[in-house]
Amino acid sequence: MSVSRIADNVSVVTEQIRQAAIRAGRAAYSVKLIAVSKYATKGDGIIDDLLAAGCHDLGESRPQLLIEKAIHFSEQKSKINWHLIGSLQKNKVRKVLPYLSLIHSLDSVSLIEAIDRIASEESLPPVAGLLEINISGDETKQGFRSQELAAALDAIAELRNIRICGLMCMTGLHSTDAQRCSEFAATRQLAEKLAANCPDNCTMNELSMGMSDDFQIAIEEGATLVRIGSLLFEGVLF
Image (tube, rainbow, N blue to C red; front, side, top):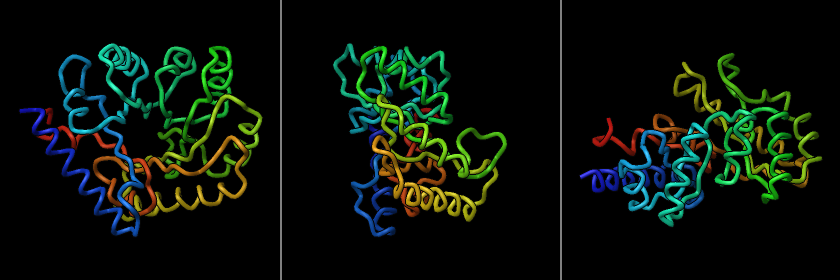
């Protein structure tokens, strides 16, 4: 039952992504679904159902749970691209780096420098990540403020073991749909502005914007990565 229901949910969300991309004048393949697997445990079969439904980019909020699931599924020879979408503390960097395809939550220069140093010490390939932007200005949100980015990019330019691929944002906790639209648009515009002066180890090709309740708005404003959780598990976990 869960396999069929999750497959149906993935199909519905995929079609919604396609339609939102069309409305924005974009190709559906320009938007990637990141299935948020934090609701699943490594042995409950739900991640297996996501894989069967074609979801191979999975997002986790907590580094330790990502590590446990990555080890479990690597032993099963499952092909998964693991995305860390939650905050990363420096004391977890060394353990989690070998399993990551993309970090969505680079929220300080000191964290980025720690990742660069540890990647070098562990002889890992350059780590791919997104700069987390506090686009709403909420005091409770992490991330760079817009005015901090120029100095951050100057510091990042000196690093050799990290590759910045774009920006990630979360809209304000109490933002209306109109405000969310404005915040997503502001993130896209910021990426476009930064792209003109990025250092060699930085591009602005990816925009991680939008979750289950606002991903269609995010796509219309330029999102290339959407982080979807609860919609995929309706009728299974919720």
